[in-house]
Image (spheres, rainbow, N blue to C red):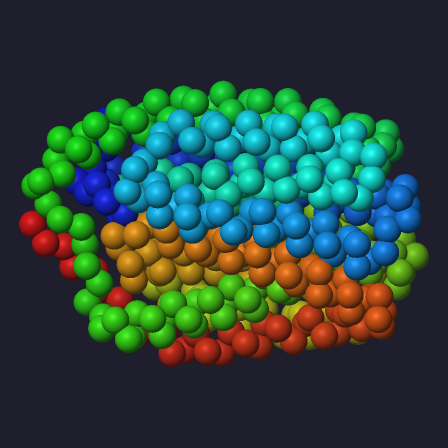
Length: 407
């Protein structure tokens, strides 16, 4: 692996020889395990609602606390990692997740549940920025592909989580969540090995620190700030809609079509599996055709399918959700890499900001849609949320980027 020589130390390293696929697939697998664990939280909502008598607003608050804990610290962790990389922080973050899982399995009420999901969220805050740095460090220059391999692991975990919850947690109850601690333990062991690789590569980076300087973006600061603002709006559009799907799609199917909890979980799995496939496809297309065009197509292209979703029968609804997942998912990897191209010396901080926005806006969206569902109906919530992808039209104003490197 050390043959993948790195020539940048701060922020945005570039691999000069090949792509470290072993590291990419390992970090992607850990992302799968991490997000599989996190996705158990929304999959538990029907069970927790029945067990404790929670309102939709309380369900939204649980998601809000989890997502805020997952988001608030990420930019700070990323900024610190840019200045002082910590190879073994990845494994440490997974230990927070492990503790939160065990707390979630035995939480007796609303406040302990909030504390448990906050612990899991803190683990996520530590994991994502540094893991994104590792993915780009191992990319060999194929940054969109590397980010997609990393991200598709997370999306795959998000898809598998509800499926496992339907098979393990729903039949056996809240305490069965403790079995997922084995996944956290496995991820911590894998991340320890990734940390060893990362540490050895950092030594190579330091040895070459004086030879070359980090890349610079050729755009004016005002244009860079405008582009970042557009990307934030893209994240809002994508993850407000996705929050509605992940937190309330099961309730929507149960309410409108009278399906069982387990059937609704399988339908959610279909959406999330399509989401994972779309993420990988977006990375491949982003490297080939340009990230700006993938961003525009991904969010705006999903609009016809989302707008049709509330007006179809059960299988038509599931089919539209699958098509939406395939298309809308391809944006995130392209957005993160495009943003790091705008700030090539701040990879960790930018990844932290955008992963933080992803979780934070998702949490706010979940809380908002929970409140709206209590005030109106779950069907009304889906009619409102399906208009969000139309905001993707502003992606046409994103500039083209060329990153230059100074020796």
